[in-house]
Image (cartoon, rainbow, N blue to C red; front, side):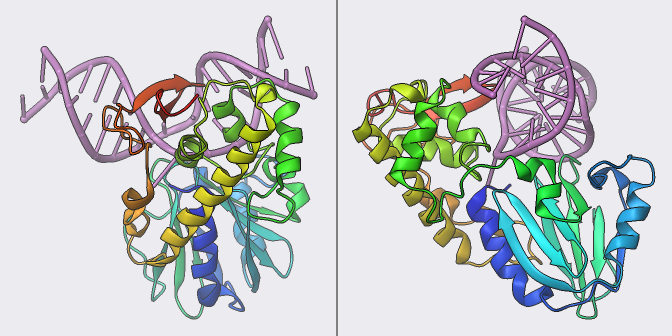
Length: 276
DNA sequence: CCTGCTACCTGATGGC
DNA sequence: TGCCATCAGGTAGCAG
């Protein structure tokens, strides 16, 4: 499901539910969903996970890239949704449907759900301890993300623009949808090598990334994530998408057909007329 | 170091 | 209606 805007909206909606609440009990229903803590073995990971979250109060809910982070009194609880992971809220301790990991509080139970089992939950002592998070690049909606910073990153890479945008070590949180959308808005061909982009094109790309993510975030905020309705996030997305998943349909800019190509094993959508 | 490819999983969908 | 191939909003690990 989620790229940066979706995870950010999830974090915001989760705060009033769990901040200040104690995890009375953690339950691992499908052990595959638990990532062993850094440096530890797979064997026994679920049991250690349960032991570490039990009795811990959730102090702060945060986000880094596409990672959702629940800061506990001791250590952090890290959730990554990959393609299809999501959160479900139950009003009691009774859960139903496919749930991989459950966190019981006095107010209800938070369920981490991913039937495809690509997503992971893990406990770590700190953010720096999680290998995937340690290498993350700049947060695109933070003050550290500037045209100058983006220009430096683009200059030091030979990747095609699309792959650059998907690379979490450069800019964190952009995925397949918002990369295509950003390039369309910036009128840049996904196959361009990033070190050859001009200052003017860099400026356009910068504005497009920030703009696309802001719009998507607003879209994710209302209606706010509903943890009782697993389909919440899909609603309203079509409103803002301009090229993603629109192969063969008319480009909203020029009326030419939207094309789909494969890059790095993933689909890229773009308009060859508008994007040069 | 950089870049590109594949594995990891399951379910939905479309062609025959 | 099966059955099979293909695709899915992501990342880690490995080879070159």
